[in-house]
Length: 142
Image (tube, rainbow, N blue to C red; front, side, top):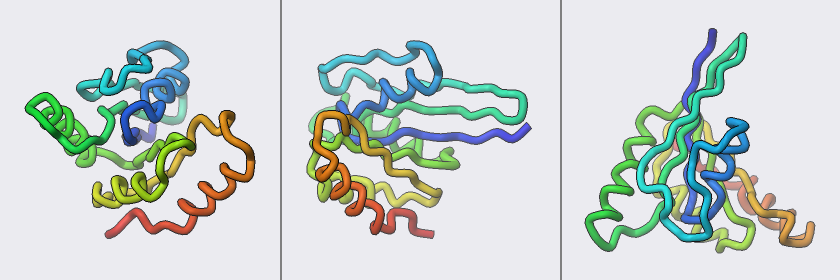
C-alpha cells in the first residue's frame, strides 16, 4: 500500500477546513465564518485498498501579532516538514499577489497544487485570470 501526506495551506477563511471535511466525507474540522478557528493541525486519514492519504488542515497563514498566533504559525511550519504534497488553497476573492507572496515564503520542497476556491461566487473571466496567474508561478524550489 502506498501512503502519502497532503497538507493544506492557505490564508484564514480560504476554505481549508471545508475542503478537509469534503475530502474525508465527514465533519472533522470546525467550519466557521470566524477567522482563525483552526488553531492546530487537524488530520484526516483516507484509506482505500491501494493507498492511504493523510490530510492535514493547518491554521490560516498570518503575520503573528501575539503568542497564540506564534503557536499557530509554528503548527504551519511543522506541517511543511512532513508534507509529500502541498495543497495551496486560494479564495478567489483574495489578492492573488499576496497569496503568491505567502506561498513563496513557505519555501516548499515538495510538489504543490494551487486550488482556487469559492469560484462559484465570481464570473468565469475572473476565474480564468486567477488560474492563468498561478499557472505560471514556480512555487516549488529544490
